[in-house]
Image (cartoon, rainbow, N blue to C red; front, side, top):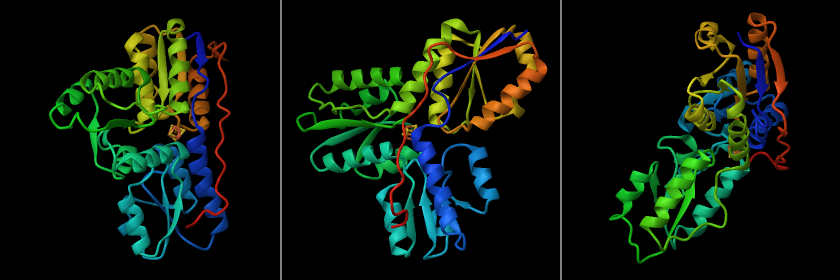
Length: 313
Ligand code: SF4
């Protein structure tokens, strides 16, 4: 019988997600008479997207689904220069809601693309990886084995550096970076890794809780990279850990069968608090004696990114 529910902190929305959502909402508010087209999911969460759709904001997969001259918004994950070019050549007004921490990686890529061979640590096919890798020729690695395969592809007498997706597993990425250094001793280490503060802090919060719980519940979408990394991290130590997208995924029999008494809850950086609230309400209706509490010594995410003065370019 479930007795205690510990809430991880920080969890849920990060500064970049709040920035992207507020970007679209402000644009919608100030351009009521015009249709706004958001390219791809603004953040990887179905609830966030459907809330916006209900308010009349339209989501498209590619820009050719929007009429020439319309207002288009790029999602928090960023886009490749090719997409920007398309928008410009079709007279579209661009709203760039890319998280500033993703934009920073794009800037780094542009800065070194002429002088360095670039290794990109990331997930093939993820929107952020596609956008960043569009800035320059890059060699994608997802595993240590991928690094070994690069041995004969890169010229080790010429400068090599690496960049990474912002939402990776901190510990897995350390191993990949170590492998890069072994295989390419001349690699130039960037001053700072690209895994963002939000990813790092949410993973730290989960790691701290693992000795005190029977299982971790991660609230987040399957295509949310940072949510999936939280799940993997939890499952390394607590095999019973699982992911839900919403309260509809709750399986009470699972709790009973596995005798889960102490549950940790975290939420990926794109998961709104309303999903956490709904899940707690449903858990409480099934386990009325369960105590819900913040995990001791946890902290809030207070980072904030200010919207630009001009939203459209
Ligand atoms: S997870 Fe990090 S990089 Fe992604 S939107 Fe949030 S702050 Fe930005």
